[in-house]
Amino acid sequence: MAIETEDGLSTPDLNDGFNYVPQMATLATTTQQALEKRANTRIGTSAQRNASIDLVQEGTLWVDTNGSRSIYTKQGNNWELVWPIPRIPTARNFLKSQSGWTTTPDSNNYIKGIGDWVYICWFFQRSGGTINVPSSGDIVNQTVAIVHEKWRPNTWQPLSSAESGRAASIALGSNGHIRLNAVGGTANINKGSKFSVRGWYHLTI
Image (cartoon, rainbow, N blue to C red; front, side, top):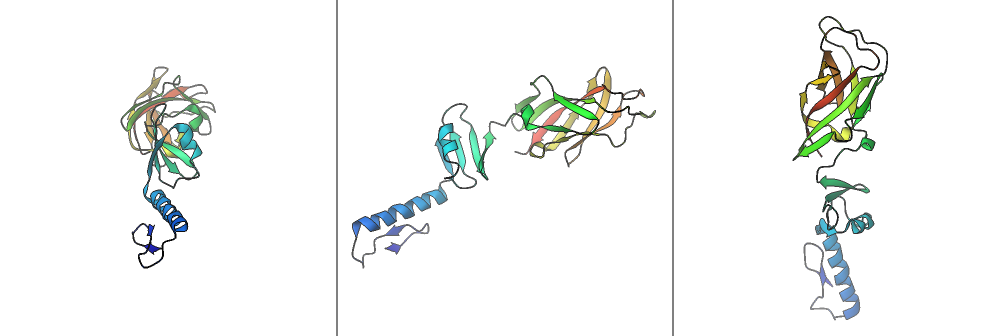
């Protein structure tokens, strides 16, 4: 059979004798190969999506036809949610506490999405020893948590933290480190002192 298309579809050659069964089988095989190469968007139920993980190529998009009609893309051996913007469950470990601190979400209602922007409220509490606060209120080298690498924003608009009546200045570095830079007043930060991370994030998903 002659190869006549850029995708490798085989068709009978007019100069050769036509052998119906094997040549049609070759045509079907090459057509399927071309479809798998070109077809990078599929639709079906979530059960069909899960069953097809080993059959589709890397980067394939899948639109569920049931449930929330979510959109996924295949990355490695997993389906990664593309739309709607994934919520961050506690199990996702959005924040990883650093030594001397513990973190907890705000009553499981800590993230609300608006387009690619989300609002988060997450508390952190001192679990280690006392931190002496200088008269300036500035604090040195206090990384309280690290943002999970999948959820590090490319834009961060921090809002004030004011738990237990005490304001705090929070900053987020490009490496995902959340730092407590300053607090209101000069009272020391004792075990049990509570603050929060509040702000708008623009996520790269």
